[in-house]
Length: 168
Image (tube, rainbow, N blue to C red; front, side):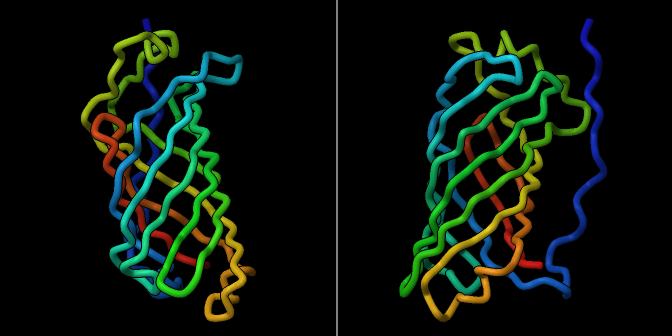
């Protein structure tokens, strides 16, 4: 039998006063393309695009490439390179983090995830990640020396993303 996965407590509430909102996005993942099963986990490639609905980049978009991996313990590992495109600037992000399954969800073995026709459940998974940013735009120069925390959800079944990014 399988061992149930450990779960983490709920994330802290959004909108903390000690941080600056960089963006909140709503968007979707493209299809997850399995690359293969490796010793460290099942690797996927996916592209995504989202609208920025809050923050100084509101009305812009964010897009990028994610080399996503699901570890044997069911936790997803995010290694993403993204670009925020606003009205007057572009910002490059390097994101590293985790996708955590919902409480009580027992993830199937990686071989099952890798099998043709497998579909993730229509459920929200918690996203918790950090980002370093680079921009040449003087208005956002301060972002070149901060760490950004991304918190939110991704539904791996539907691809829906809802993420809030705050600088520390």
